[in-house]
Image (cartoon, rainbow, N blue to C red):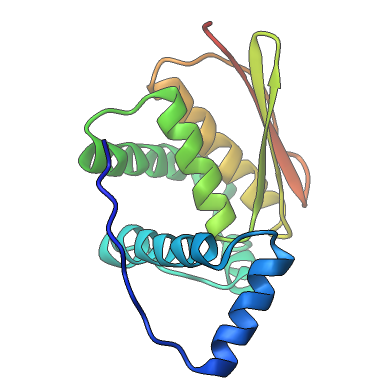
Length: 174
């Protein structure tokens, strides 16, 4: 059972007014929004800053990817998959399908990328929408494929020939 603690903070009246308006627009109580904001920040700080991730703007990343040798994408995606798995193992001990899916969705959301899970009968389809180009589509699709294969999942289909999206279908062992 998770132990919860109360935290009292002081905010400028203008900030609290804006904060309350945001909570109302999101259909959340101010307390729930406050919890979400603090939790998101702590997770960002720990997982990104403390673990060594760098934040790069989309235009810069897209520009960098144009110079990546296409023949190296397979090697890069395997390296990324190994690194991601080692990080999850270091933080959580084991890597399961559900943990990997949760991390992938949170990571993409935290980076303002669309990464949706569509549950099918016997499989899950993951679709990413982005504006990072064809190299990103291929690199990310292959990285996720490698991740899921390394934990014993079966890839049914993957598509990455688009400048703005990629998709991946994974068989579910139910």
